[in-house]
Image (cartoon, rainbow, N blue to C red; front, side, top):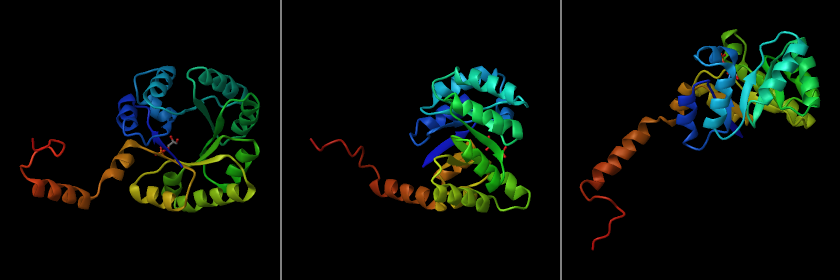
Length: 220
Ligand code: E4P
């Protein structure tokens, strides 16, 4: 299972990378635009901050432009995965980019049928948007689980990367469904740590230990 952080912030990437459980970083144009840095600087900085791939999304709307941007992004860092939108141009570019050996997949994806087209074009990943599906009155988890089942049944190697996850409840449901990969914004990752019984339990142990000092110090 892969766990990614969804951010363009170097400090957030570094903060979570130090715990060891992050497998890479996903970004999107909105996140990059919220920084003062160029796209290239953001990708290079994130690549340096986290041990794992950096997912970077193209902005061109035609296949030729997407392929050009994909090749350029790919040269910015050792482990770049190019994100292409689930448009006709995106699927065309995907086929061409994957033939070049560049890691790439389809994002802004909302259905099993869109996911199948991506897998047929040897996508590295598909990124269904759970939160936006739920916002639209659909069942995001059901769509993701359907994609995962179809890929497993057919033996596609394309990674199912659940995105647009808004809260811990959605994340928990994705884990229970055994989804290949999940990307989470820092706020949702932060919430993963919290349980009031943990804070209460740790405080209790410290209180019972009292003033006995550092446990690695011996009596003599
Ligand atoms: C995925 O890689 C996208 O960057 C992201 O998860 C979209 O999330 P949003 O719907 O909260 O913008």
